[in-house]
Image 1 (cartoon, rainbow, N blue to C red):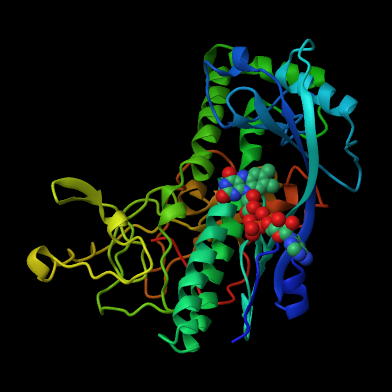
Image 2: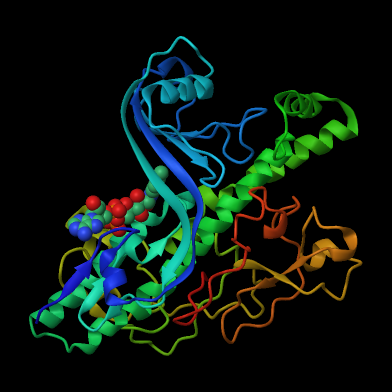
Amino acid sequence: MPTLVGADGARSQVVQLAGLPIEGESGLGGAVNVWFEADLSQYLAYRPGVLYWHAAPGTPFLTGAGTLICHKPWTEFVMVIAYDPATETIPHTEKFAVARIRQIVGDDTINPKIKGFATWTINRQVAARYQDRRVFAMGDAVHRHPPTNGAGLNTSIADAFNLAWKLALVIHGQAGAGLLDTYTQERQPVGRLVVDRAMRSATEMAEVHLALGFSPGQSEEEGRAALRGLDQPGPAGEARRAQVRAALELMNYQFNAHGFELGYRYRGGAVVPDGTPEPRPTRDPELYYHPTTWPGASLPHAWLDRDRRQVSTLDLVSGTHFSLLTGLGGKAGPKQPPPPPTPPVWPSTCTPSAPTTDRSTPTATGRRCAKSAPAARSWCAPTGTSPGAPRPTPHSPPRGSPRYCASCSPRGPRNRYDGRPLPGVMGDVELS
Ligand SMILES: Cc1cc2nc3c(=O)[nH]c(=O)nc-3n(C[C@H](O)[C@H](O)[C@H](O)COP(=O)(O)OP(=O)(O)OC[C@H]3O[C@@H](n4cnc5c(N)ncnc54)[C@H](O)[C@@H]3O)c2cc1C
């Protein structure tokens, strides 16, 4: 049974030659990685992190002069420089890279050792199908997005896991070939979800820079003046500081989105339903993981005692075999509590839509595009409820800061990302 698996990255030839249809846009921006060594302990050891954003007056609006990813504390890093390939070039030279690193760090005396350059492109794409007969594709080959939320590799590994156990069963004659079709059914909606979240997170980064007072094309002096406004006493200064707090709060959707990372559920594919209703979220499903043993959800962690050792439920199901989890002594486990009667539904996405009928209470009905002229103000209605779930009732958006829609995106018209989610190709996957 000859089988081909294309795990050949975002420029996948396998996807291309197999004719797997790709949805979405490519070339939304360019980026260069610069790998270097420099001892930055004095600046970073007392405020450890893995990712250091750079925001400074007079540097590119959204990304500053570059972002540092820490590879080895505090001596080895990758500097990511985002740029617009239509108007800019980033020289792959030591001279340029050293100057940029010094600018980000703010220290002209450091002498970084440059170890390599790599270029990549910002895309917003997902394959509509992950397979054509016995040709499969996985990883960045089928979902391409910016690194915001850090979900690319994790999603690729989950693709590999999903495909590997199914291939093994089919190849060893323990399952019919139809099982392989469930690979796309289960994984493609997750790829779409990841692409959409990563794009939204990239767009939301603008909120921090706006709150700092930065805007596209601003001079260094203008930027410094705007920054000084953050220190002013009184209501004006307090409003600016509140905007910064709200913008930082929004970053939880990139850095602390446990529901997004763990909470997706397969609603079909190889999952055998047990007839119970799907538990609905009681908190923001992107931020909060809702543990459940509902079929199609990932198994929650719980501590158990085994042979006088504490083990996780997750350790019990590792390996290459099926596991049957039961209650004590092999009996049925406790029944799930019934779902709450009127669960709150949070928007899983924000789609530009027609103006809401109730303009008098904007914050209760949608998100406002702060830069649009009042007459042409665009609104985003909460969307993304599950089939069968009640239409979302008007609610306050989870955070207070204004949103910028794609038409006033800081990257300008070249950025063709319109803020809308990718079309639902394989049905819906939602966080719940
Ligand atoms: C700056 C940056 C930061 C990131 N941070 C994170 C993070 O924090 N967390 C996370 O989960 N993800 C992160 N990612 C995403 C992650 O790197 C990718 O999602 C992941 O590498 C995809 O793995 P892959 O195996 O599908 O593709 P790749 O890693 O691109 O591997 C594909 C491989 O196929 C090879 N290949 C291609 N064509 C051929 C061919 N014709 N013949 C033979 N070999 C071929 C390539 O050489 C390459 O080795 C980040 C990405 C970037 C750019």
